[in-house]
Image (cartoon, rainbow, N blue to C red; front, side, top):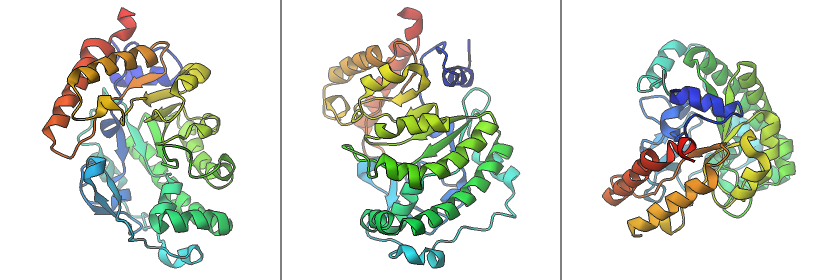
Length: 333
């Protein structure tokens, strides 16, 4: 039987997996701790932190402990002054071998995929610096200044990526940039292609040169960018939220784009007060809809405050359903 890593790589090569993968974002993605201000914090641990640019992040109950920039506390109010405010750290003396050992210490690198995440979320970077109002205005009114700033950040990210590839020895590379609402992207495809995509390409080219598969994390209705992602060599996407035409996307792209997730986190099946049978019925329909033909990874979840016992109980239902029905789907159907 294939390991999770071998099975995942098979998917990224456009083949049918041996078993339906269960996407494990927090354990497969490795965020360089340097990018989160150093220390021992880990992605998704529900703790406050200050990133390398000086942006303060705080967890919220509504995001199940996920961190967001402290509302209203922005570090840049005039894009023309970014050179005075935004400074990347000097990483010339970083002990990358020791950093890799620390960041990978809790990972099962033999059996699970390792997807390094060096950054690359340029849209989110700008919004965390300025807030959405000023950030969006800057993109429209001062595009040249925005591009200069993004180039500065991307050059730094590139150096981090190169070192992570060398010392972390990953299987894949992950980019995350939440640039869409539940209804539409914040920016047009034209603006993406002019201001963001060229920098994404630099990072993706390095990953491809090192034989890594590439995954895009993008929440919201972001399907407008899929063709651009494929041009960059991206072969998987999470969380593939239901605000997108997921059935149409699966039909159009088949196994060219692995959809990790596809779960309705806002519908009745994900409500903590819903009857358990509602969740179980939704899980069966979910698998029967997206598993056939491959190009899909299991990723349902329910959200609750950290420590919420009902959320934990419902997640156990989801985990048990994976073992009992979903994992061996391709053997039984």
